[in-house]
Amino acid sequence: MGIIAWLFVGLLAGWLAGMVMGGRGYGVIGNIVVGVIGALLGGFVGGAVFGWDVSGFNLGSILVAFIGAVLFLLILRAIPGKQPFER
Image 1 (tube, helix red, strand yellow):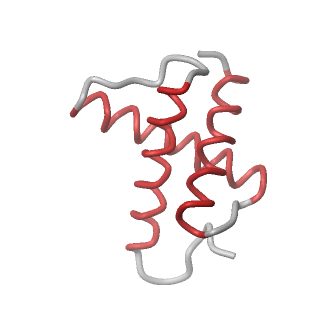
Image 2 (cartoon, one colour):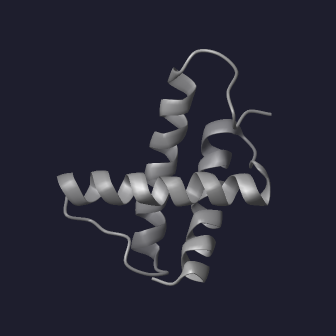
Image 3 (spheres, one colour):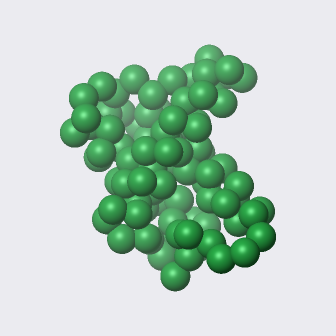
């Protein structure tokens, strides 16, 4: 998957995770960061447990990235102190 596809998947997954977890997004750059980290985390966990992967700009990749982004935000919220992706 090309870098542009990663950015679009990350942007969409980060925005969706921001809407579900916080009620709003984190801005374009924040959404991309959350989504790309979520895609990596979701791809790792999904691949290890279920055999899922992030293989292109498709619904399955967006779903895996979204689940990973939600997991990433849950992990961040479990850390005490000021949250980096909180408004």
